[in-house]
Length: 231
Ligand SMILES: *Cc1c(COP(=O)(O)O)cnc(C)c1O
Image (cartoon, rainbow, N blue to C red; front, side, top):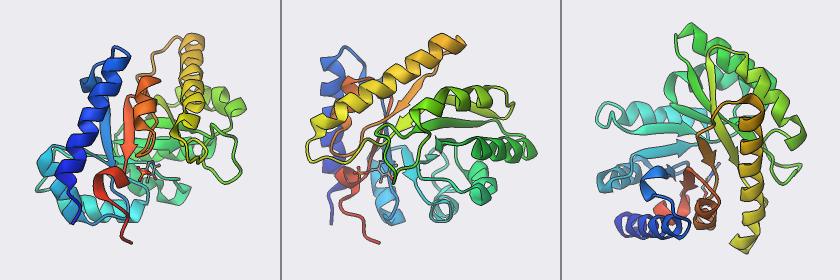
């Protein structure tokens, strides 16, 4: 069995050290357990050691877990971190506190529309295809500003920042330039639209320490907490 407690203690320590290195406070960084493809037992284990944020990347799987756990553990924060199909939006807005993956106008429109129906203002991040990769979700850098402005004109979608998954590399240091780029894109939007964007969701098991040095406020960590994904 994975020692989730030991894993989490190591990660929290690493978060603290990375934050201190750049004069940030560890409390300002949210550790999001990327719990996709992990059983609820492991989520409960992590929760009991103090992890309160979990991210799922499939709507169906996420809802199943939320329905299973929300009564016993109502203070868990559930985030949606995967690519989101338009026809799943009505379920996603009902269950998730923060959607990390807005990457096109049609998706933003649907989130706005479905949230309105349930009297919710849905907090979201815009996912940026930071490495300009064919295979990846995310808006192209050149289209980011237009997408953000589009969202600003909607009443029931509230953009809180940006998210990215850098191109895969064996060397985590290679992620740094993409994290810097995402931070700069966020700062450009803040300047241009005169509105603070509090969140940068970046960094995974291999490179979250680097993401923190570059300003991440949410790090999404899966295997380093839970071990290899089981299904
Ligand atoms: C699975 C996943 C993660 C975590 O990946 P690990 O390498 O296991 O830490 C982070 N972000 C997203 C969007 C994911 O789907």
